[in-house]
Structure formats: C-alpha cells, structure tokens
Length: 452
Image (cartoon, rainbow, N blue to C red; front, side):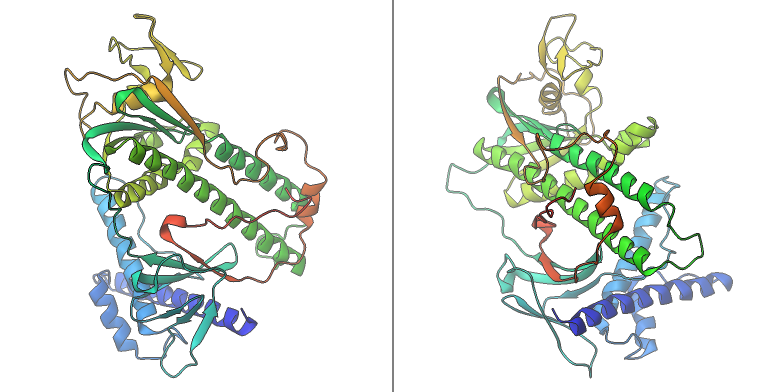
C-alpha cells in the first residue's frame, strides 16, 4: 500500500468523523432552540442532501449515509435502554476523529486481493490491495467496512453464508438438547444427551489478560516521568510511544477475539458430532450489575459475556442449531440428584453433603441448564437430569504466544524486554488487511525475539 493510498483511506475516516460531528452540532443547535433533535435515518439523509455534493472531501454519499445510519442506530438503542429503566445509557454526543465507513453491494468492486473503494464524484478511483484473499466468493460479499484499529487500517468484509446442509439422517436432531454454562475459567461447559460432556478451558485467555495488564503497568511506570502534563504538547518520542501502545492494545484484542472464536467453534463442532439440535445457554449477564470488588469487577469486564453469546449464536445458526437463552441462577449451587441447595465449593468439584453426589461444578451446571425452559423460567417439574459420564477436554487459545512453561510470572518485577518495549522504536507502516465477521481478528501476529 502506497503512502498516497494510506493518506486517502485515513482521509475517508476523518471525513466520516466530520459527518458525525456535523450531526452532533446540528442537534446541539436544535436543543438550544428547544426543537426536536434529528434522529431518524430519513431526516438525517434529507439534511445530508441539502448540504450538497463535495462537502466532505472524497467521502461519497453512500459512505456518509452509513455514518448517519450508525448514529441513528446508536441513538435509538440508547433510547430503548433508557425506556427499559437503564439510566446509565447515554445518547451519542461525543465527537470522534475517525468513524468507520461502510459500503454495500454494488457500490464497490472486488477483484481478487484488490478492492476499489468508492469515492466522491470527480475524484480519482481508489484501489487498495488486501493483505490476504477474501475467504468468500465475490458474489456472496454484501458489504465492506473501512476502519482503523490500533493505528492500522482494516477492511471488514460481510458475506452471505448459507446454512450447512447435511445428508439425510446426519443433521442436528431437535429432540437432542444440550446445556451450555458460560464461565471465565471455562468459557463453555457443555452437557449433552447420553452423559456426554465437553469442557473448553480458557486459562490461556485469562493468562493473556494478566500478562497484558502487567505489561501495560510496566510501560506506564517506565514513561511516567517523561509523560507530558495535561494540556502540554508531547514530543516526537511520546507520539511514537502512543502509536506503539495502540498497536499492542489492538494485537491483544485480536488474540482474545480469535481465542473466543476457537472456543465457540469447538462447541459447535462437538454439538454437530453429537447431533444436538438445540442448545440451551445460561445467560449470566445479571451478575454484571452486582458490585463485587475491584479485582472481580475487572474479571467481569474482561469476560465479554455478550460477545461470547453472540459468537456462539452465529456459529450455531450456520450449523443449523437452535440457541435458547435460559436463566442459570442456582445451577452451580444445586445438586442435580436430590435438588437440594449445596454450598459453593472452593474448587471445581461440587460435592453434595446430603446425597454424597460429586461432579465437576461447571458440567453439573450445564446439565441443570439443559432442563430449564427458555425465557428464564424455572426448572421444569419432573424433568430427569442426565448426569455426565464422559467429559471431553479442549483448550482455547493455543495460538497465544508465551502460553505454557515459557510464560513468565506477572508478579515478577519488570525489566529487560519490558524496559526495551517502553522506549519504543519507530512504528511500522500501517497496512490494509481484510477480516470477516466469523473470523474477525484471526490473523496471528507473532512477537519479535525479546518482545513480551
């Protein structure tokens, strides 16, 4: 990618930020006059048409309308949450320097690894080369989104993927139901019919979070004395350091995202082999509103429950499997044999003091979730809980570098490679890559020798 193409792509993102800022400014004026704000997509498009062509540099009308649609969706989503009683929901009123731009089918051209990004009328055509091939045929691609993450340019590709077709008698059976318990140490614990169970370990993901937090603290301590004061302009070295920080943050997010996709793919592959037609997933999002202390609140923020559920639902839909969210309250502290309350165990094994039943806590919870009714209802009366007999273990995050014996204890004092990373060398030239919604961030970025 040439420097001219790189500047033009960032110019499109900045122009999209100008569109976002114009909408905020127009609504601020209307609030001062006590008028109704412009929120619907149709009203915003009429205001855009009145501004005339060429107002936002090389950004074309289709790209500008995608920004307006993003604003309208964010506004109505906040209004819906506030109507439901969530007072923490905020309307979009913050300016953004770079806003993602989306173009739909028919407005762009995809030719192998080359993509023609639409620009305003009268400007030169913008052709960019992707870092890898798009994993879908050109006729299945429905939209592309230009965005910036961690100082690097990406092209997010959305394609229409057909649902998997199975031979007669080999597809998922709606009569076979499995329960899924979502957790931190084990992202997914599945209990299926016939006493079969699956445990997906997420300890590598947790280790990645811990080491990233330790590295971030070490970098901040190393540059704390040289950091510019509030309102003071930073030096060239400081700007290079900020570029390096954004690159490290983006790499960390891509690693965790890929591990989450690997965990969900493991669950769906296991369900297809077991011919499971319905997955009852416990919805643990109610615990997010409970204050549990500084350390545990950090774990909950890093858990990313909504993303895990969405990834699992997307892959299950492609496989022809139905997903139902159920209430999981009490499943990890209720004995599945005698149905009595059990004190929460300190380890991963649940032992009932009443009937002497013993089993893995997450797998037992998944077996209880499989008997619950969708919609958050109570446990179905008279339903027999099939206790798991054969448990299969899998691990997510094998691609994460440093996982295993070579991973250093985060409690060790920083030094060596961490101090070298804090000084920061010159940033690499950003490139354009391609990502798909089901393989978002799947490109593994290997660390250099001596880099933590």
